[in-house]
Amino acid sequence: MARILSNGELHELKRWNTPSVYNGWEQITRHNTGRDGFNLEPVTDFMPQMGPMAGYAVTVVIEPGNPAHMSGNPDAAINYREYVASVPGPKIVVVQDLDKPMIYGAFWGEVNSNLHRALGCIGTITDGGIRDTSEMNDAGFKALARGVCVGHAWSTPVRWNCEVEVFGRKILPGQLIHADKHGFLVIPDEDQDRILEAIRFMDSNECKTIISAGRDTTGETISGILKAFNQAVNDFNKAAAIKFGRKGEW
Image (cartoon, rainbow, N blue to C red; front, side):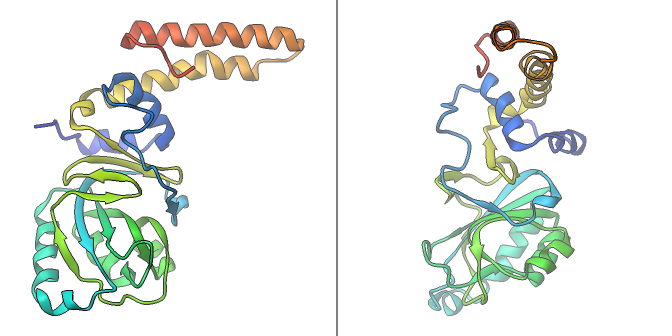
């Protein structure tokens, strides 16, 4: 079982954007950081002013274009909501829409976002559509989605608490997610223990070396700037190697 981050640790995790979280994660993981962890298809953050969100996945599959789901399991919505309520927060609802690439109806709008907020959910990642974006903003419910639409069609849960795939990334219930306007990163269970330590170090390492070299150029010639930056890259990679046993990103 992975250690669940405390509320304070999750709050600290939100201090960085998702690329910064990735920079730390790639130093400690055994996964392929060129393909694993993050969305492989474009996704839009419809509430970028809310900043990053960090929480644990609850999952659901929908197919708004298929009316048979409404009569096939009349208690589906009730049972799904009970599942969501039973899981500790903060939660990010990951929704796979089987209608893709069409968007026939939105699972998310004013009503569902307010209800899920009350159940401890802070936002959603859905490869379907959303609507009532102003009202979702008012509810404080962040959404990364494929698009917007007008109607809701037959947006009832088909199955939940299962593996889903959104934007080219498979996600399991309970996995830690960090998301913002750049996309999202699913942090493997085994990497949670060191993720904050790694982010702190790599952020500081950048500031002390390559960012400083790129900004502190007053009175320098072009050759002097390049020489200083090349030295900073070496310092950056050396510090990462000493700390984590591997080269940094540069």
